[in-house]
Amino acid sequence: MGWKLYERITPLPYCVYILLSLKDDNFYVGYTTDLSRRLEEHNQGRNTSTAPRRPFVLVHAEAYLAEADAEQREELPEDRQRTAHVAADAHGESQTGKGAA
Image (tube, rainbow, N blue to C red; front, side, top):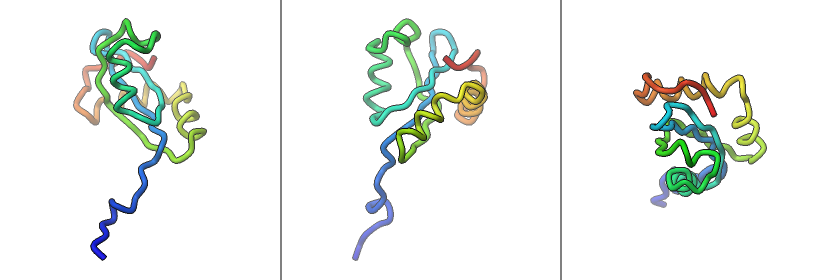
């Protein structure tokens, strides 16, 4: 007794995320099992491909149970720019983004 629904839900382990570079207004799409850690790594320059484009803000995230699903979603090039723009618009960032990185 006393259980709440959210106490019984296990978080989905894989997260696809979209970051917006505040330096060049472009997007970066990736996936991780620890979104907080990964965002920190991007903003501290510990990712060589994104270090010159710092700082970043998170504009969208999606959770997946299977790593293969997250990886597949991350690698859909025809959807990346559209997804990034839709996510940015939904979060009030409509002036952003020239394309997904």
